[in-house]
Image (cartoon, rainbow, N blue to C red; front, side, top):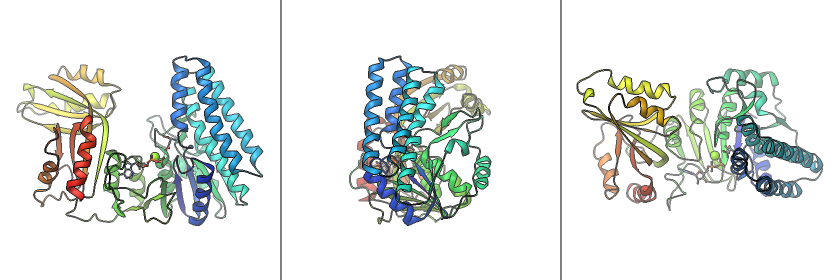
Length: 436
Ligand code: ADP
Ligand code: ASP
Ligand code: MG
């Protein structure tokens, strides 16, 4: 029992699926099982928060709450026998908290409390089901073990320490919540949307697991985004670096922070399908990628381009440092960057501090902003000694306006910036020309 398994929203989205999850957990011998909230829950909770924030009609909020409660109620009805009443009690207390927080909204504090309830309830129901099946199962409260520091970074040492002190028994299935944690003020918090994958990776590292498995609704990392492209196929083996890059550039199957902690300890990450446990899936490890082939395409939306044009850049040194300092001051990371004689263009994926950034950059040159862009990342086969690879990519999308290109930052990938309205066409064209 030295594996950490994580199941996403659809994997625990119904009583039937929870039964499948319990089978997988026992077959795999999971030491720790990390669960998301039942599918759709977090979206609904976020809606409740935004309605509570804008002081919407109490009846509208109540409607959302009671529809959500029906979903959990039906699941408990179908799933549980011996521990049914305990599950109902837990559900009632969770929905009391939701109502209380929504009706007495305390800003960020209520926001975090409300959003955490999905994972808390789902993991409680699942643990009771495991016990109903006669299995030795124990619920771990993630906010008691997973803490973030003031910088919002996870305190990995503390997590390791807490898990070590718990002295996990090898004959017990430990179930815990993904996504949620405590912040440095000891208040409930979360790791951001899709963060359960990251929780699983952190737990895997903390117990030095043999493997981290991410179970979802698809048979592994595909070579293109299946939400937009037909005829994609799973990739059986992938390197840590390539998987991290694809996750960063929009492959939704993995939260972008998942891979790095596992890479550091060399813990393989498997991506598997809950509905098809026999399917091979994807194994992410320190394998070398096959050279000479294109491997996969991913796309990241909501990208803003900032173009800075300044004659002061000509033959000057230190100009880029000044530009980067502005982004650093506003804790905003840069994805793509291109430079010319008197201009630099860069992209960001968060507009939170855009106004301040633009205002400060204005002292360095003329600034233009373009919103609603998408970065398309093509991974695989860009060895520095190869020729014609970039040409092959661009030839495939010759009718699509290209706004920026990033090539040569590493030998694994090439990134292209396009207008978001051209995304679906671009992904399909790349699929047709690079893989078929
Ligand atoms: P979970 O709720 O289990 O965490 P997610 O919705 O976060 O699941 O991730 C799985 C989804 O990621 C798939 O259903 C698929 O639509 C989407 N996806 C996007 N890009 C890829 C890709 N390259 N390979 C596989 N799935 C992808
Ligand atoms: N439930 C959270 C979300 O929907 C976390 C996760 O699923 O990973 O974002
Ligand atoms: Mg996910």
